[in-house]
Length: 116
Image 1 (cartoon, one colour):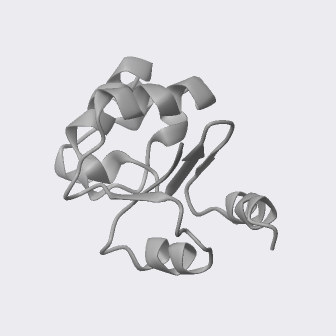
Image 2 (image 1 turned 90 degrees about the vertical axis):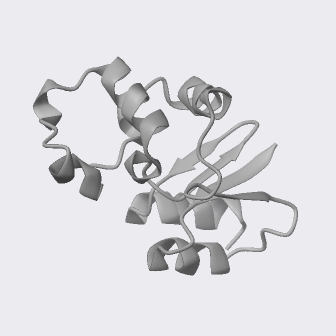
């Protein structure tokens, strides 16, 4: 399994995806094809944390008046399944590894993974 979860309107996602040869990867645009319970479970298996998958930059946090300090793992899970913008992106997932978000260390790890 090799999948990338991304948002097509996100310039950062587009820039990152264009860096790599993803011809044999399944590309999933999360707004038009939301994350499934099974896919989230696969991600959780690799992270053991829904919070690690959660984007603290989602515009929905302010719109819904969410207090991040009160959230627990199950809350993160429900929010991730409820709205695409709560997923930190892009997410690259293989059978062995997961790369979450656009932080520099994650991109460095992706570069290494792709042999760059």
